[in-house]
Image (cartoon, rainbow, N blue to C red; front, side, top):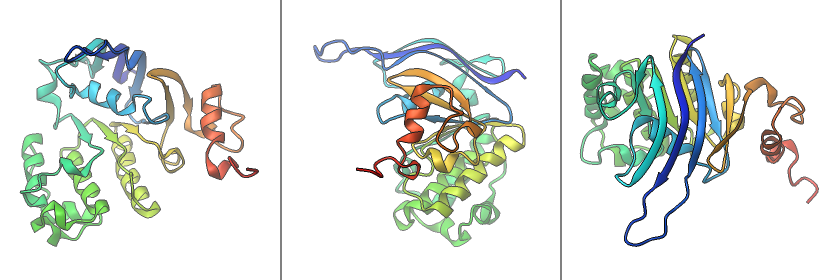
Length: 259
């Protein structure tokens, strides 16, 4: 199966500012493919570069970013010329922070604007109901929503145009298990209809029932990819040593039980 998203030799660093010493690359020679029908969970410790990779794919980097390598989507090379026409339409982002919602605009209006950008009708009350939100919240401003409600609004705005590729950056952060499962099920539905999802997450356990594969990022380098089914038991089926270490470090897998 040909890849929907192909990342080839991606290296990212940042030019120094104000006389600061040059920093080393934060992403190094990454190569990764994502096919239609897949949910690829991207995991790693804090600072490994997971969110930076998501932003690099979308071209959402500061001016001092120094990027090399190639990113391809459905036969298009993603760059400053092609990305503006694809973002918000065929490629969508579920951002990590709920501060991406405009604090001065009712959330229903924000979803309607996302729909307009994607070239589809406003989903209205039905869209809110699909994600378990009271349609009356369409008139609310972001400050009136709980964190879980705000995350579901961000998800609705990202999915409204049925994009081919969804990049979700920690979409279950601070959600209870039921809320996390609802968000992940909505993302899995993207893959089932023939799209693909790059799921940046620290919550491997919650992601596993919905993921096809797991990509392991360590210090800016890809430490391997594993089938999601390998993450079971004591991790004997995980090929990479780093993957086994991550898996066995989880409290539910006995880490610290004898401390």
